[in-house]
Image (cartoon, rainbow, N blue to C red):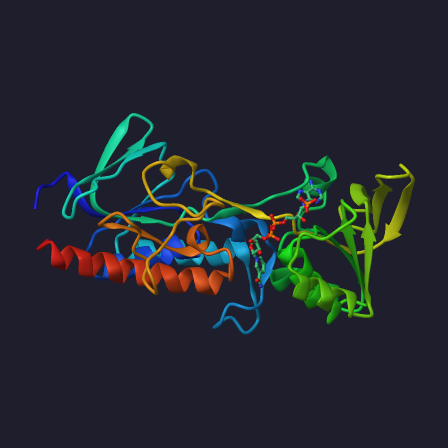
Length: 314
Ligand code: NDP
């Protein structure tokens, strides 16, 4: 094997990337992992993770990511705190893929893309201020903390409808803020929302501010965009559910993407349309989006990469 061609490069450092690294390293692929701009990924912006199997007392997101990294490094994964800024993927089987971290060129036989997705936010300064203190983009992750309390869900798509329905079983009341006078969500999801007693839908309403002491949400400032009337709602949790954006800009034009930018994988595998390029985690999954499912596909990607290397005789 030529020295400067790596067997496996992993792009992205969430649960998918580090799990791929653990498996690839244990299969002796000597992986290099590039963390990107947000080492640890989305989990580093959450507080307690209570639904990852194996942590009966929960664990904080940042701590879990540190442990995953430590585990990957124990098996000699090399972690680079760098961003992959350009790729030139080979299109033929056995071809060598080129990746660039700035001007540095990296050559690899297999690439695992696990760059994740980023939740969209409204862009209010208050969102940042109250992040982790009541503002969240994941009801499954953080809903539990609002047991018996009032919460808001911003958005009108399937995610917002699903989050509102999920939260209605935990919170005392859920108010949905819909910016237009209609939902975008599918009929069946809308019906579910409308049939739930403790969900109130406020059409033509937008969130414009958040108030509270010690960076903990106490009130939401909302505006009726038809009448311009402002009001305050007493809430503890604000869930922003206006969609996610997969982090695929750098791969666009080279790899097959769905219309909404997610990487297309083949059947139940992590194979993309390019030989030797695999995708794991949220970058190829807009349905489940959980740390545990991301980790699962990270494992699959490493196994797919290992099999591919065997096929090409490396
Ligand atoms: P969508 O893009 O479908 O919906 C985003 C929603 O957020 C829209 O209602 C939009 O309003 C609203 N929105 C966007 N920006 C703002 C803003 N600045 N202020 C207020 N509201 C805003 O994203 P989803 O995450 O809901 O869904 C993504 C995809 O995943 C869809 O294809 C969906 O069907 C699918 N999905 C399927 C599920 C299922 O089947 N169980 C569950 C979850 C998602 P507007 O309508 O006015 O544009």
